Length: 196
Image 1 (cartoon, one colour):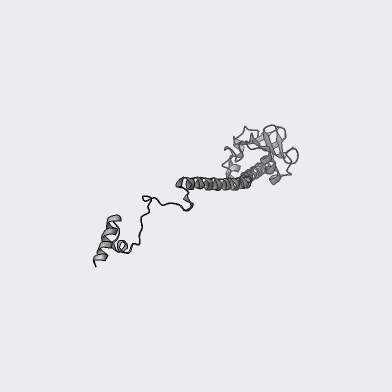
Image 2: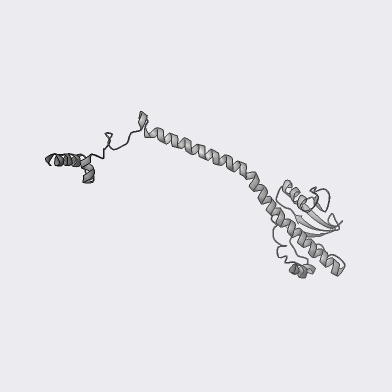
C-alpha cells in the first residue's frame, strides 16, 4: 500500500492535475522537451509550416487551373443567355411593328433610340413590351428606324458587347453574317430589317 501511495505521490508531484488512476498507472508521460512534442526525424515545427505553405500553393494552383478551364464555358453560357433575351425582344418588337403595318397600312415614323413611337403604345401593351426604353442585355438601346440605311428596321443602337457575341446573335436569328441577311451591322447600329 505504501508503494502504491509513493507511486501515486511521485506521479502527482511530476504530473499535477492528472486524474489519479492515470497517475498511478503511469499512462501519461510528459515529453522531456518541456511540453512541446518533437517530430520524428528531428524536423522542427518551422519545416512543417513550410510544407503547409507548399500544400496551400499547390491547392491554389489547382483551383486556378480549374477556374481557367471553366471560364470560357461559363462566359459562352452567359453570352448565350444574353443573346437569347435580345433575340426574343427583336422578334417580339418586329411582330408588334408588322401587326401595326397590317392594320394601319404603313409603319410608324422614325424615333430616337429607346423612345416608343406613340402609335405603338397599344401594340406594345398587347405584346407586353415594357422593356423598349431599357438598355438591352448586350448594351445599347432598341430603336425604330425609318430610312436609316434601310427602309424600316428595329435596331440595337450602340451595343457594348464584342463583335463575336453579335455574330453569335446573328447566327441565332439569321445567317451568322453581319454583312448580309435580315440582321446587319451598319456603323453602331445592328438592324433587324423589316423592309430594305
